[in-house]
Length: 288
Image (cartoon, rainbow, N blue to C red):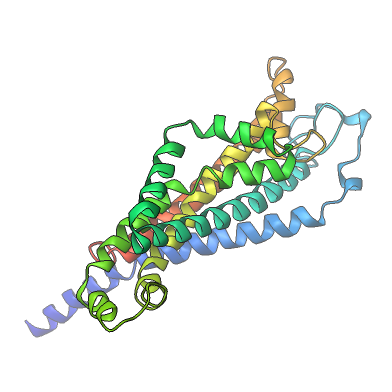
């Protein structure tokens, strides 16, 4: 009987080893490898590799060109990798910038209270009430377009949801006993925020930044596709998709299929990582 119980416990432990933590490690490792490969390969691709070859235009996918070639004979695999590298750099910059704004406003509102918290809440509602795509286009045009316009536009429209999460967390921590005792001992709001609040909101901040990343690169691609983002000479996914539209009706499906699929797969992978990390920091799901 004792041996049977041990076998059951061992089997149960073996099943538990394939839980949330293992899925997070696996997905994070896969994305990390893919991200490193794309970024390194994208930086290594130079203009000579993307040279025009009019003798090999519109070649369908083959062993020499797995993603085919475009209307001037450029290799679509190289263009896609170069575009993904650029999109990922923009996504990381926008998500980190949005996370910084969310952390600053999400902590400052509840800690300072009064009119400051009211203004921050009003700004959140204002930004959320307007479609992100429209706001990004207007901001991009206002600051001169290009890479700068995309980064500023996406950053200023993707901080709101994370700010709400952090603000709600700070409001709960502010009412805890040790926070009240610290204030009664004369500690400043800055000290309380640094010592008692920041350590508790960092997990939410990390999850928020990861989840903002796919939204950032998709918005960058969509705005560029519409003609309000990166200039046409940039090897961006949005530019590639925009240029390929005129050739889809003639059967050149690979011009849009592979770049679009690659962008969606990267977005889904990052979103999966963010959701898994969110499960990990939740006590109800961390040990399933």
